[in-house]
Length: 147
Image (cartoon, rainbow, N blue to C red; front, side, top):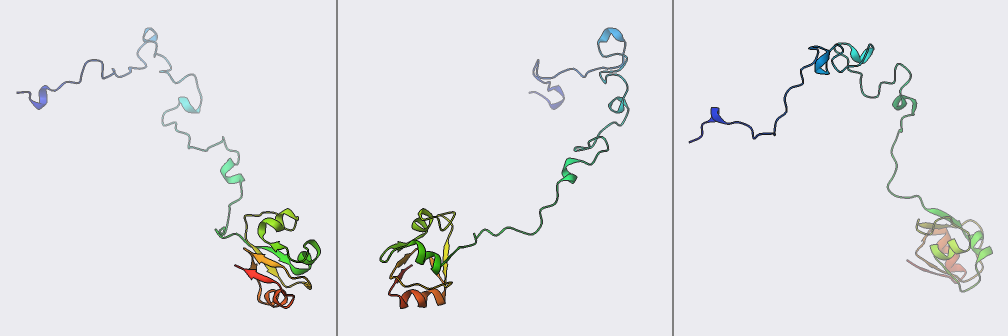
């Protein structure tokens, strides 16, 4: 039976330790593979990661990002007077139609209708949030709100 002290690594699986500083003929003599003079040739030479030779390092040049960013996007605001100008009676107002008319920048970000201005046409609102006072003005003009 094989004993623990008789175990040997498989042939070719290990490398010999590199012997340095033992003559020119070895290929690793004189400077021992460290090159000529300089900080990296000295004993105990280890330069910290990110050290840039004394100048202000990049990670300290860039300002810190503070606070936090909300996962919930802010609503895009639509006023009733904008809707009054761009839409005809009976049309449907949704984020897509508002985007097509150039009233909002992004059709995928939620839209909220506010009561700024007057509304005289009966319009249908779909997939938009509506403020309480805007809801009253829309219903007064004969419009509908489908959530």
